[in-house]
Length: 411
Ligand SMILES: Cc1cc2nc3c(=O)[nH]c(=O)nc-3n(C[C@H](O)[C@H](O)[C@H](O)COP(=O)(O)OP(=O)(O)OC[C@H]3O[C@@H](n4cnc5c(N)ncnc54)[C@H](O)[C@@H]3O)c2cc1C
Image (cartoon, rainbow, N blue to C red; front, side, top):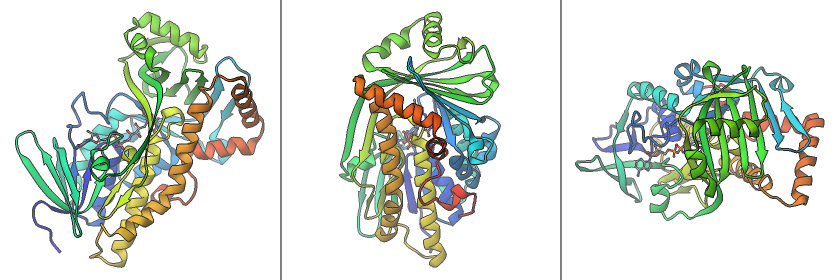
């Protein structure tokens, strides 16, 4: 059946990291897709494609290869060859090496902005995809046979219809709220300050995560000898850290990091993000699904947020692909298939949220009991290889039932 103008099989609200990835996954299935994004990709205020460095697990890199995005990203990607985990001023350190899993890297680090550039190249080539941007969604509703999406392009109000509405519009999801889906919120009372930073010594692909009482301090290997710094501080200290003169910032960062890569010599522009856990109570409604940060926004402590969202994308695309193989005229918004998506994703989402939330809470707990538990945990992971392997497998994003794209197989 050919759909008329303004009618789609799938309408994705939010063209950020997760929504745009889903558009790349669905286009080869022959579905007519609308991708509706409020902010153009090149704009400095684009909230998804900004300066943050993203650690992508090995499974995410495979998914991106399957979506055809990896070739444009690869030249900006830095392999992660070791992960060093420790707690500030306490004994014990875990060094994870991918060789323990028979691999030569855990994944790659890529700047979110490069991701936006890769998407700008990919999107115009996608067949049967209409990219509505800038287009800020102002109303969504679902009916028996289709969902309706209204947006403003700055001049006019436009309405489109789709058999399936996908909310990929981030942690403050308008789609989630409009569908009446409740969400659990937890304010970590921390903010992450990020910037590029250049150390004295070569990083040689080493990623460092240091847990401190005020949140993690992570240094990710990046291109041209640079590293990506993520420094979490209590919310009431973020303004001071953002306004601190560069020499003072570098001094403080060097003191905290302890010279593992020599001294930090230079730094780039700083940005800050308040940290909250957002977990939707449901992710599927008749003719609608929410995914990525719209369904679960997590603390960046384990660098899992986008990796988790990409697995949502891989599973939804696989379920729709299988439906279409069985029946080329299958309705992509039928609730039975969406429920299969939800059931498949639930254990991975629950486990990943519990892992990052648990880490964030235990490492900011100042009680002596929690400190002892942390040291014991760290030492256990340092000396018991199966535990370390478990941690490494999680870091690489291979757990539970693995979607075909993450295995390097076609949809
Ligand atoms: C400091 C920091 C470091 C991180 N590091 C990592 C990491 O190393 N690895 C990792 O896997 N994850 C990491 N993450 C998490 C990752 O950034 C998120 O998981 C990811 O951005 C989620 O993508 P998304 O597309 O779901 O949402 P978003 O990135 O929030 O994108 C939502 C999109 O929807 C659009 N939108 C919103 N409302 C509307 C509307 N009404 N109409 C139209 N469009 C709309 C927005 O403009 C935006 O483009 C980190 C997060 C932070 C804060």
